[in-house]
Length: 164
Image 1 (cartoon, rainbow, N blue to C red):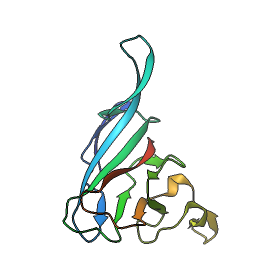
Image 2 (tube, rainbow, N blue to C red; image 1 turned 180 degrees about the horizontal axis):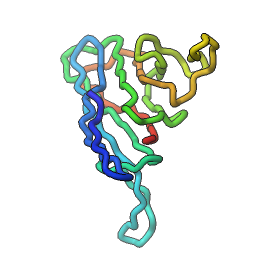
Image 3 (cartoon, one colour; image 1 turned 45 degrees about the horizontal axis):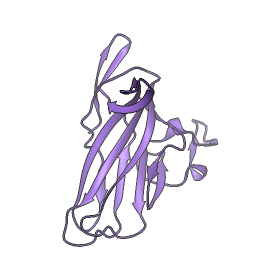
Image 4 (cartoon, rainbow, N blue to C red; image 1 turned 120 degrees about the vertical axis):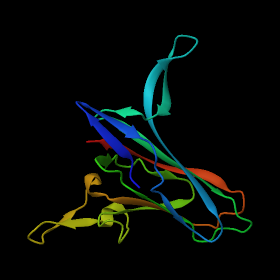
């Protein structure tokens, strides 16, 4: 499921229901997805701070931080754990923004059929000419865990994208 959007002149409202994230592993992996934006606010001492808040209203050109929290709630280690997230509609991946400790991060430009490192991704035009893929060509992001996730293991993976 992709985030649902309602279009209001000049404003896009993102209703955060990002359960489109998919995890595959032996064991039971519980996922929670969050979409946030960064805002500047003044703290109690009157100093400006950047804080993350839930993304409820997002304007074109604004960046959204998509975070998936994971936890192995099973009684066994989760072998070959993978989290896959489709790029939300009308969003362009922010280059070099994907994070995930202990994971190998790969991308897809073909709707999630194949994954590779950005330098190895290519797209083809109507005449069959090959071009290096750009962040706006990404359709999915995948985090593959190198080591098994023991019971109780938890963490997060994330990426940033800009609303078109």
